[in-house]
Length: 459
Ligand SMILES: Cc1cc2nc3c(=O)[nH]c(=O)nc-3n(C[C@H](O)[C@H](O)[C@H](O)COP(=O)(O)OP(=O)(O)OC[C@H]3O[C@@H](n4cnc5c(N)ncnc54)[C@H](O)[C@@H]3O)c2cc1C
Image (cartoon, rainbow, N blue to C red; front, side):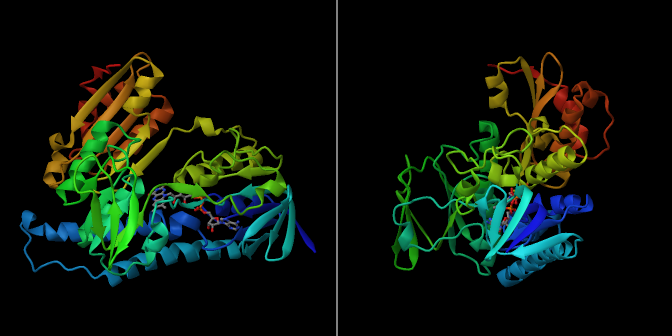
């Protein structure tokens, strides 16, 4: 038997549920299918749990350093079971919120099971056949598990299995010195683990500028995190109750012995088991669904949103995909992916907020540009809080005066970068910042200083 719908949504990540709300509001009989956890990665094994754990780790860090502020007390202990319970409670609230919202939605039928295409407009789930003229794919991604020699013989963790950890690893080795790996690194170091980050590049977060990578490394190294950079030819092996990670680095011990191993080396899309071939939907070589500027796949009536389209890897990019699609399909809009300005953050403490291009990208564009930099140690608010690591950076188009990008590494860096992002969307001249009056004492009050000392960006 086939059930006909006006629209089918596969996956309940960051785009699917709000899209279901808009489609059903518009009168469409809609089906949404989830195979595992309502709310997807961000809610269950991504942003929300990690930022909750980051908050616990920060509380531990502040408590340990309380005496620096004249606050004296007993020794600080960590109860990992309670840390996890707090995280679970916050995740549960969001997960149940999404599930409850969807299940109560008028005109929406919720299916719990794995969906597979059975044709361009047909999907199978748990033996049922669903059909619709419009199908929206929001299946997200999962941790990439690299093909490391010896991996089959050792236990390892990913961001998902880390969510069940309610104990303190004695020594956590993390393969991957990028966003996810570094957040776990600082968090577990602050909980009390020894932590070694193993990265194949010669610097951390290689997509950022070298000065930002170096400043992030200084912040983390000061807390006792060890790094093995330029780690090529990795291999792992069981060594009694430990895991040996052969790193073959340019210098240092050739092997690291750790109690636990976390793999944080990127994400792959959940598209391999979706029957895309039956629908004729094209993917790129890495399995990401190919979409045009309005999120259309090559098959009319099928769209792909969120991480599975390879056009973003964040909650805000997935949600923005939904906004673009809803505007175009339901509001007569003409919004495009290419209109959005890239922005992201790294939630170590202090955080890195980013918007627009980095120095490398500006240089590669060949345009005449100006750069401003300011150490966070100049910022009164940072000194008062005893957290003066990091730097601010801004890049300006020398001719149009428009802001091309910013990197804000320091306290409130994630929020300050967003105030710049707003100006970038407005197409404002950097001189708007110069003439604005900012509140004292904030980090933002130093933005006029930052743009007051611009130098030509050397090619
Ligand atoms: C550790 C970690 C930390 C992160 N931190 C941040 C952060 O701080 N900020 C940020 O912006 N982003 C962060 N991200 C990224 C963010 O979580 C993702 O970009 C976001 O969740 C992507 O959402 P999505 O809509 O693409 O799909 P997802 O949230 O991945 O959801 C896809 C859903 O589809 C379901 N599904 C898949 N295949 C099928 C199928 N065949 N049938 C039925 N259902 C299916 C899945 O079960 C899942 O529920 C983090 C990610 C990780 C891993």
